[in-house]
Image (cartoon, rainbow, N blue to C red):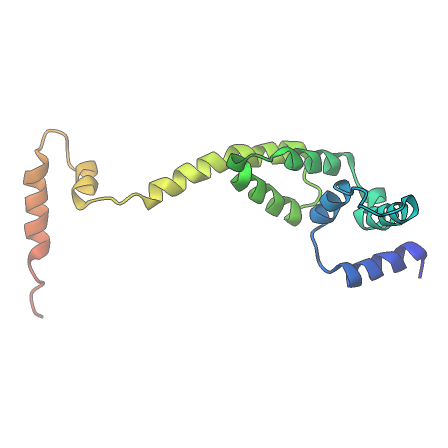
Length: 153
């Protein structure tokens, strides 16, 4: 067993199943603690950088990490959650894929709002009746046709 493999296995056991993005994000937020000497800080940085898996970090992964990190505003919360979920599913996503997801979210929200709208029977009937016929006349004929119980067999 090589040292890198042993470190990876131990990191998985000790570190739990935190998403790689989360590990990397936390690593980038490291600051020197009050009372911490430089040696202790260096040890912590080294340990977190091992968990960061710097050697396996691609250019695209760093760009995605930086892009999602930049989404700090409250109005970006939904897209941030969606992007983190997608990045967790596919760690090899690139910026183009992230942008595609960003553009899809407003469309999904719009479609969801359409589905959530309550539609009345008259609205549905209005979509199906010819324009030259009055709505109420057609509505009454549909209502009377559907209000009769079926005949007994």
